[in-house]
Length: 257
Image 1 (cartoon, rainbow, N blue to C red):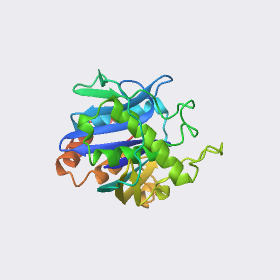
Image 2: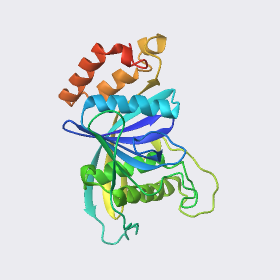
Image 3: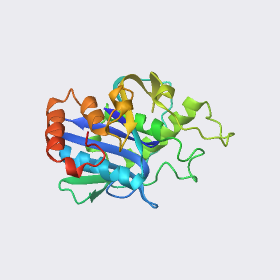
């Protein structure tokens, strides 16, 4: 599991066998790309090729120039009976829609996005916390079974976690701070259940930069190499990425080195 940061727009990447899901709670269209009017979305990719196309199109829609990827593991603990759950029950059916022009892609959409300032005090600043909640929730309730209400709950719980992290659970401050990985907790109670987080590898770089002194010196890494490094333990995934990228250079202007 990873946190993907495309120029301060965070999303969660969840991999299971050959399936990869991107959970993005920003303002997104049904394909998971940036939109003026949109909702949270979980985009289900049935091949590594779909994932690579999705990231390429997402970064174009965001106008992203740099990226960062953080891998982590999540361990769910016992439910704490003394902690009240957050009531975010939403009576709505799943909205499953066709994805992009790539085959075998579908998505589930939420009802409201993190930037809704009518609902959230710090609208638009909570994407890191929301992505962490998405990974935590997946560890006990597979994202492959999620519907609209699951995404809505992730957004609300992520907003609560953001307030807990920043110490702003009271709606007094108008200051909104974007979080980084170092701000995230090692342990947290989410929806009445304890979760332990272990943050592992971290890679970053400029998306269109694939050669140069920074890369040669190991200070940054190309997006292609970053993805391969993060998913390297999934041999089929990494080998497929490497084979495909090495034989389709012209299709990947942001990772040609």
